[in-house]
Amino acid sequence: MKQKTVCAALAVLMIVFSVAACSVSPGPAGTETSGSMIVTETNVPDTSYVPAGPVIDEGDKGKGTSFVIFWQGWWGYSPLDVTDVGIEQLTTEGFDVAAYDRDREIEDKLGIKLIVRSATECYESIKTLQNDVLSGDSDVDLAILRSAVLSTAIGSGMLTDLDTGSLKYFDTEKPWWNSDSYETLSIVGTHYGVCGDFTFSDDLTVWALFFNKQFVRDYQLDSPYDLINGDVWTYDRLFAMAEQVAGDVDGVDGMTYDDRWGVTYLRDTVSGMIQSVGIKLGSKDEDGVPFLNFYNDLNVSKVTKIYEQLYKTDICYNIHKNGGDEIKVFTDGRALFTFGGMYYAPQMRSADTDFGIIPYPKYDEKQESYISSASPLFLTVLCTPQKVIGNNDALKGAFMELYSFIGYEKVRPEFYDNLVTWKLTRDDESREMLPIIFDNVKYDVVDLFNFGDIAFKLIDMTIRDDLNFASSWAANEEKAENAIKQLVEAASK
Image (cartoon, rainbow, N blue to C red; front, top):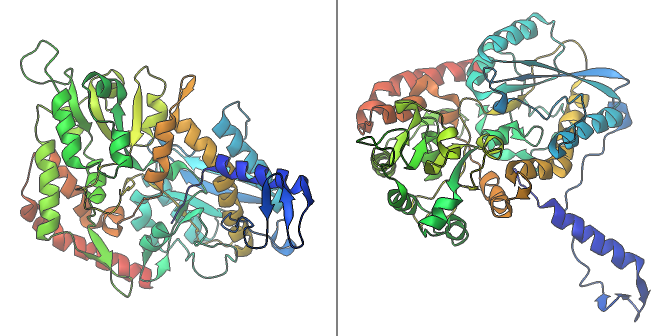
């Protein structure tokens, strides 16, 4: 599991231990005394949980060679760009500085020159990369691809298996990798991609819920933070609060975009709602073959309950169905809750709205934990393309592991602060929510690969206020199963 640490706390511990070590005075035999604390063999604080970075053999380092990374944008939409890999110009922003320093540190430690190439969109660029890779002319060592093109990349045979052992240092058991992504992105035992602290662009694609703090105060609502900490944050509570705030305030009969809404959402964000209540559209058998498993009475009842609430058009506003700006409707102070991606946060922080960031709710209080998920379209995934020219796998594995470790240790704290810093203040309550969100990200193989478009057909129902799940699933099930069969055949070659 991709774990997040509170680095400030670790730093304090290190300082405490360092000061203790420097102020030791003689004590009884077998003990050392530091101030009023007696340190014995049995009460020495255990710091073994603090992860250590990889130690790279000298023979696996570069000799001034170029190391090439390719990443894909999302149709030129800058909030989803990969902004922490290949930083050539130093700025004064903490996150940018940490990313810049990481690039320089890894160049120094591995004896390489980092070169980064990018494309503003993904569908055409994956074809170009595929042609280069399969022709043997590509010098790309690592690629950060969008989940929308993974089926194409795998089907073409352009990606290698991350689990061959040739990467040497690559270890998904380390907390800077998300092991669930690693397993989910495998097909018939071949691991094609992984998410982790190599880049924080994958975290930006995680679904999150934004709420207007002023509305919570004005309407004397329960604090979402308290509900989450009390483990009672559910969809029933969310929609009840939304009903209290929604109102027709624009002087036009009927609810319009310019009114005050309890909930606003995009069609895409509904996939996060489905997964947040413990539903998986699919899984894999013992041979690593994906299969569909959404359609059963329990899953349908859960999704129906959420959709029925979303279809209350005097409370909830569907941006994809009705139009509008998903961020502006919130920053203009016209929504209590907005379901969105974490990439909303930096944009919202430049506005005047006082808001918080929290996880999607649970289905009910019996659900064990909050469950997060990421966009099945623009999630960024680290992959290793087939490569004839350039560096060997040992250097690639060294780069992957060391780069992710530095990201975990030094870049992540700045990334967190970048999400929660609002003008000249910092939203510490939201910062406490970030580990709850990011530590609980789960991946669904059918959602990510969207076999036969079946995952999108399910959320497309919200455009039509449709509750006929049996019809939607049945209409797309065979197409999805055929798509699974084709991908399995390609991965088995």
